[in-house]
Image (cartoon, rainbow, N blue to C red; front, side):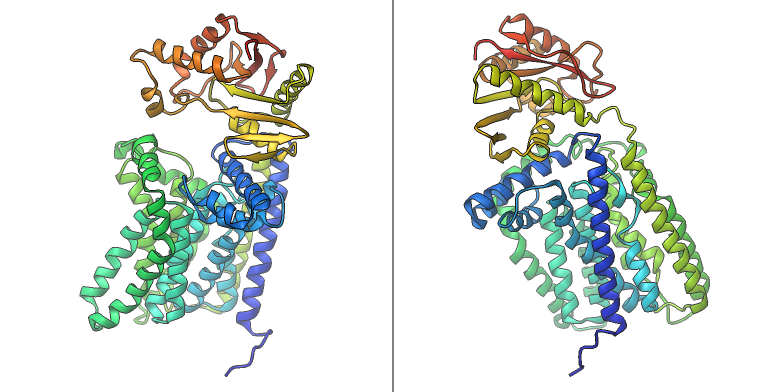
Length: 550
């Protein structure tokens, strides 16, 4: 039995990965504070952050199992809420918790990449370590929207599926049980991080399994055993989630979700590639990856022991190819799932690569330089954000202060509020600020409370989503607006209405009728203005109205 040696290159490398990931976490917390010192929350992270707070509060007040129960049903993700239920036993929600929840996946990606470069490409421990840092330092990691300092599931999906892919390549190459188990666990995590991952997994690992089964030299039974083990682990860890949430997942992805059902022509959907290479991998790592790839191609072109690692390339191509071929709507984040596989391939394109150790130092230098550029760019991106659709933190503070002041004047202990439009600000963003900036506790049904004062955010159907708009009662737009007006009259204590000149997001269902909707509400005579116009961004100015009947 080998004695444990804390000075071994393997142990030191793992320790270095843990230290680097911790430093990334602290830097992300700093960037998070930098952003929220000026700006308000935004989609999709504010919804995830609100759910994080609900799960943590439930776990803290009712116990861990109650938190798990809150997390398990009615969503497209589970794993982050499992972590939140654990955290909630010990602490109250804070935005930094969303960063700490992502760090195990960051570590898993770096850890698995280290072993990929060490065992598959046969790089030195130092070069493998630096490349493992690269795998968790690409441009998207440091972006204010969708990066580590934010809280979207796209990054968590990329990290978990990237880890699973690395462990799969290692397991398939070495046939060691521990790597098959690590692959299975990380693939299960990726399923529970985002419910769309099984589609990618089937398209990536299914064809490789068939090629191994019908093109390999091994007996069927010997080849089947590790795959069947992996399948059993994944099914055992994840099938319950898909059974419990089947109806919701079907509705969300196949009926409600405009992006998933956009069916863009390839001439449009090919724009995913621009976001993949420019926004997610980033120019510094595109240059680094191409340079290392060409260098390795030169070294290994006639080297008979080097084999192209096509599995890693295929695993990196599948997600973005799926997005393009199925015409999903363009957004900057969904192609992130392709980043780890492509980076690992271009940095390590050959199995058992030849190398020239003096040149390793040059590669290490430029890798560190590229990482440093991304880190510094991350600071700049959080400092000055050029987006008219992000409200200022000061604007949200003025809204909540105006509502609470009027409640105190009216001796009101509980109130509901509703926004009648969707822009850079909505009810969920205001709720988020009350929770994380003003210390309100949150429970289900979007209710927050503090010092015997409670507020509930109302979210009327049909404002943003076209499917929900069509489902509203009435055949004509005027009929649907009348329904929304009656609903607001009955349920809302306060309305947040746009002022003339407010610029609206064009693709939302309510946008063509927004000012007509506003005027219909005011013309009922049931609402009176209780605030001066509040500028919340360069695009939006609002006023607050109180329902005189409630």
